[in-house]
Amino acid sequence: MPRNQADPSVGQKAAGPRTSTGSRCPFREVAPYAPIGDNWGVTAENTTAETTAKDLNTNDQRAVRMDKRERLLGRGVQPFPVKVERTGSLAEVRKRFDGTVEAGESTGETVSVTGRVMFIRNTGKLCFATLQEGGPEGAGSRLQAMISLAEVGEEALAGWKALVDLGDHVRVTGEVVVSRRGELSVMANSFEIASKAIRPLPVLHAELNEETRVRQRYADLIVRDEAREMVYQRAAITRSIRDSLHSHDYVEVETPMLQLVHGGAQARPFETHLNAFDQDMTLRIATELYLKRAVVGGIDRVYEIGRVFRNEGVDSTHSPEFTTLESYEAWADMYTMAERMQEMIRSAADACGVGRQVEVAGPDGEPVTVDLDGEWKWLSVYPGLSEAVGQEITPETSAEVLRRIAEKHEVTVDPAWGAQKLVVELFGEIVEPQLMQPTFVCDYPPIAQPLAREHREKPGVIEAWDLIIGGMERGTAFSELVDPVVQRERLVEQSRMAAEGDDEAMQYDEDFLRALEYGAPPMGGLGLGIDRLVMLFTGVGIRETILFPLLKPEVDNS
RNA sequence: GGGCCUUUAGCUCAGAGGUAGAGCAUCGGACUUUUAAUCCGCUGGUCGUGGGUUCGAUCCCCACAGGGCCCA
Image (cartoon, rainbow, N blue to C red):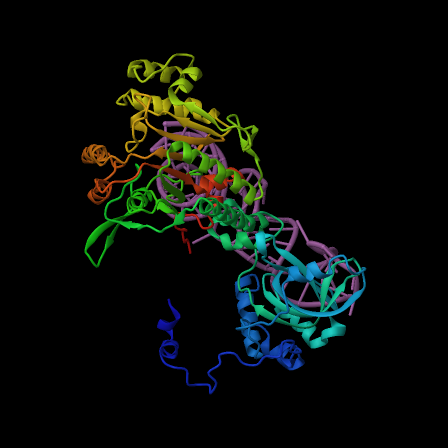
C-alpha cells in the first residue's frame, strides 16, 4: 500500500508548503567526518535494554536485520541517512594508491569512501570488510575497510560487530593503508551505516539459479560482474549504432507505440483500450509505417530504436517485447542498406569490446568463429536451396516436388502451403542454420514479405535481403515499395487474410496509404534486432540480454 | 502444442519407501592483519501445490503450477 494512504500526515506534508523548519534549505550542515557518537556504543545498560525481543526468530534473517534497524533508530542513528558524505569512489582510491605503498605501510592520506559490504571478517579487536561499488563498464570495484579497536574505541567496535551485516552500505573514513598481507585498505577512524540491508545477500560463492537471476535481477547485478557488464555492453552497442547512423546524417525519432492500426510486420498484437476515446488500440508490432510517413514528409534519413510488442511465444530466442532498429533512407536501395548494416555491426562489435572475430555455437553445437571482417556473401534463395538439396529449384518448381524434398529432409510442412511458402520454409530449415558467416540472403519469393517490391531485374522474386549470422536472422532490408497503388492492393489482400482468420495478417492502414499517395521517394529500409545482435556478441540467451525480462507471476504459497 | 529435465533451510545444492543433510549465511562464544578468515557451539524445513497407492510418501503414480532445454 502506498505510504501516503497508510499515513495521512505524509500526504499533508507533501501537499502543503514546508513550515516545520525555519530554513528553506533542505540540507543541513553536516561535518563530513563526524566522529562516532556515543550512540554506536554498547554499554551495560543498553545491552540488556536493547537486547532483541525474546520472540525474535534468529534464523529469520530479515527479522534479525529489522531488529538491528530498530536498534539503530533507538540509538538515534539513521539506518537510512538522507546524505552520506564521501571524498570519492573506491575506484579512485584504488587508482591513486594501488601499487604505490608497501605492505604494512600508511599513506598519510585520509579519505571517506562508501560501498556495499560484500565480505566481513571480524576478529576480536580488528574487523575487516570488503566494500564493493558498481563502476563504469559494470566492473565492480572493491576496497577493504579495517575497523580497529585502537582507532575507533571499544564502543564503536562493538557497534560495528553487532549492527553491520553483509549487504549493508557503509561509509568509512580514515587513512589509506596497506595491510600486512598487502591489501589496500581504509583504516577507519569513523564509520556509519549508509543504508541498512534488511534482506540478506545471496551467497557469493555459488551462482544464483537461473530463475532467481532473472526474477531478482537486482540481486544478480549485486553478485555477478557479468550481469553488470551486460548492461554496459548492451548500452555500448546501441550507442555505437546511433553513432554510425548519425555519421550518415540520420535523425532519431519516436513514433507511436499505442496505435489504432498495427502494421509493418506479420505478428499478433497486444490489445488495449484508450478510455478517453473509448477506443480499442494495439501496441505496435513494428515502427515501419510511421517511419515511412516521416520520409514522405522529407525526413530523408530517419531511424528509431525502440521496443515493439508481439503477442506470441516466449522461449530462449523470443521475448514478447524486444528492441528493434529500423532506419529508412531516401534515394537508397537494399544495397545501400547492406553497406549501412555492415558498418553498424562491425562498429558495434568494436564498441562492446568483442572485436571482429566472434565465437558462436555452430550447427552441431561446436564453436565456430564468425569473421566479421571477411566478405559478407550474397546468397540467392533458389540457387542456395538448389545446391543444398542437390536439385534445381526455381520459382516454377511445383509444390508437389517441394513437398517431396521436405519429406526427404524431414522438414514438417503444412499441406496447405503453396510453392513459395515451401521454398521459404525449406530454406529456413535446411540452409539458414548452416550459414555461420555473415550472409545476405536475397531473392526471396514474394510471399516471404508481403510489402516488398518486385525485383528490378529478376522475375518472381522480391528486392530484399535477410542477414544471417551464426545460423540466425539478425536483420533485414528492402528496396522499399513506394507505389501506393500496389501497396493498397497488398494491404487489401492482407485484410482479406485477416478476415479469413489469419491473426498475423496486417491491418488495412488508410492513413499510411494516404501518406504514400503524396509520393514517397525511392528508399531503402533496414531492420535490425538489437537483442539478437547483443546475443551474437555475448553468446547468451535473450533473457540475459534483457535487463528485466517478462516472466510468469511468482506463485505465492504462503 | 509435444518430449525431456527440474522445484528440499535465507542462498547454492546432496539425499533415501520409515518424518532430512552439507557448505555459506543467521544466532551465541573465542580471536588486532584477515581477505570465500579461522575455531567452538546452538538453531533453522508444509521437501512447489493437490490427489492417489501404501501400515507409512518428501521419495512411487497422476494432475496442476513455476523454471530450464529440445522439437513444432
